[in-house]
Image (tube, rainbow, N blue to C red; front, top):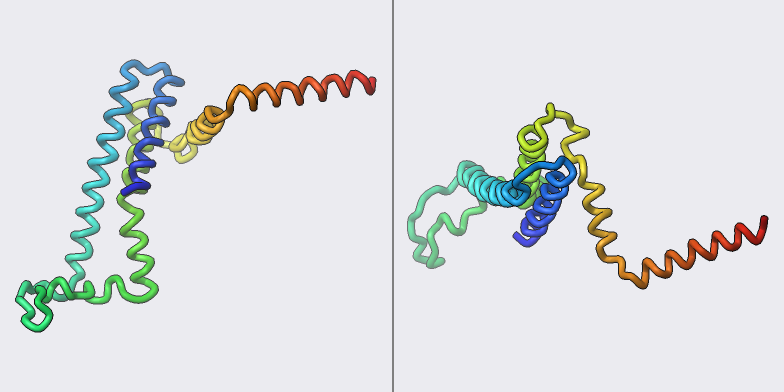
Length: 163
């Protein structure tokens, strides 16, 4: 859930920067709508994953197990769906799909509805690199900028001295 929150924040920044660059009105409506859509799609994916697991669960009874004190269903191993190496990979897929698939959905909605462009894999994730560069630049302080300016000035002076 934590990484989904981080992805939601990054989606909000990405959609806002796209709206500013494309000069779209109602920027904050687009941001709020994209984050709400992301969360709704995430909840749907969580339920979808649960349906898949329950579908392949071999022990669907709810009989009480006197020896263990639990319902037998609670002790089931999902009929081998999540056992072994393949089960590990399926578990990772079930963990990541509720965040990745909604992100892809938001990317498609951004491209087709917000920007009104035809579907294109290259343009699907446009602006993400610029967003991360802008986030990285926002951490620079005036001292860092001053020292970078001093280094550029010194390099310019060294070039002039050599000439």
